[in-house]
Length: 73
Image (cartoon, rainbow, N blue to C red; front, side, top):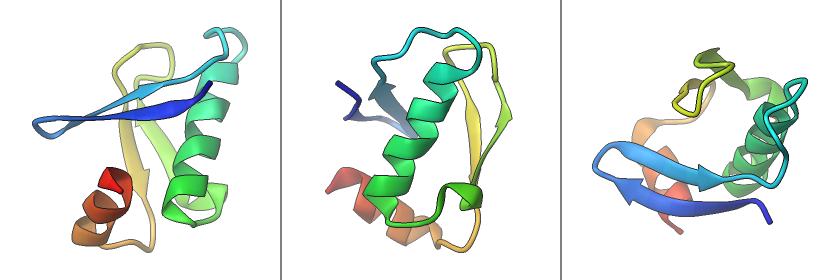
């Protein structure tokens, strides 16, 4: 099951069901965030960490305060 675990400081902890093969885990992550934030997948970009457990993600068209509120909800 894909789920948002919560924040540890400024770091968002997320669990995805797919193995990190052929980008499937990254796709699951983007889908999960898209649903939670109610924004299109195209407005979420992994900008670093494509093959790592730690990632840096850019969100387009959403304010930082809104981002935290929606991810904590």
